[in-house]
Image (cartoon, rainbow, N blue to C red; front, side):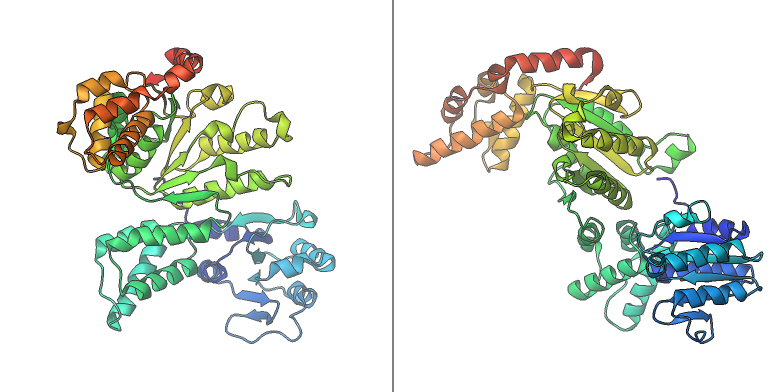
Length: 494
């Protein structure tokens, strides 16, 4: 994973550039002030802070008289000639006042060398009145080093009070990864809550911490954290080529040697093919195989009626996915959200596609994308060009060997010994069936046996299979079209 840019170093460069006005998007006010004070101290600059309740105060001193009014505070700053950093924390209040905005612009224009005004707040953007004057900057999520210090200090503090035992370095490292993307205050509250609920911290708490983080980050519910699958890629019947490709790429995930060799981390695959043949199962078991959380993005949840709202939801979901990294991001039936010809919806699909393609091009390492598509012809050409995905695989109907494997897995999962059944006979009886249809045959046969108060037998399976019209027959033309498309455009998954 590409190391995140250090916010301290970033801020240091901004202060040294002597830019008079910064607009900072920062939800974690306490962390921002800590960073500002650290960088300002290196340059021997005093720090002044303003809040709507307290007014303007230099660190270590009381507030200036009647400076709770932002106009008065800015007038005071304008009269100063000494260098300093002036942080206005409740900048939303200031930005709602046109006269105060004018005062900010005047103060920035008249600022002496070494004076920097910082407007800060959650979700803050540069007001139109300050375009070309203010420099926008966003406080990046805490670094792994900051999170590691937080975890260690909190665990050590509670251990000394006898409230918990040290979970060990390996668990602490896992917690850092699970908390990545949260503010320090949110991370601290989440850790404290988990410790109090469970009487300590252990490896078993990592999934709970990830799930709680998802709730904090994804308030719109566009993303869903899928519970870990019960098996690995070995659980998937057939698809030998796809599984070998994923195992090969997986060997380089998180490898220092791979980075030293100049290998780029794997970025994603597109799985297309006949419905019900295991594409979704690959996504679930891949996350378990690689030991990563699995995030499901449902394109249908993106769409809203107001202009721009759908794109904002997608951008927020993608930021959350980045914060959850390293992770597997699964987009099921991706053509439903990014189909070609989006004019009928006022261009929403087209704008969503543009947002998503930019993210695919520029996203940081650590998010492996697994996209599945049943109707690949609905996807626009730019989605499929080389470089968007590491590879495009076509998942066809299972062959005889894979059908026997699917039958064996489904029978075992329901407590029946596969050796008791004539699997070669059933593999022949289910020719042209998808994996999902074979599962339905097993379930239907179990109902037959239950109704007859008898043990499940091969004859029950055969009778159920004879009653099913598989998709390869009911929609033979569509299956043939999928195969024709994939012949020159995709790699066989088998």
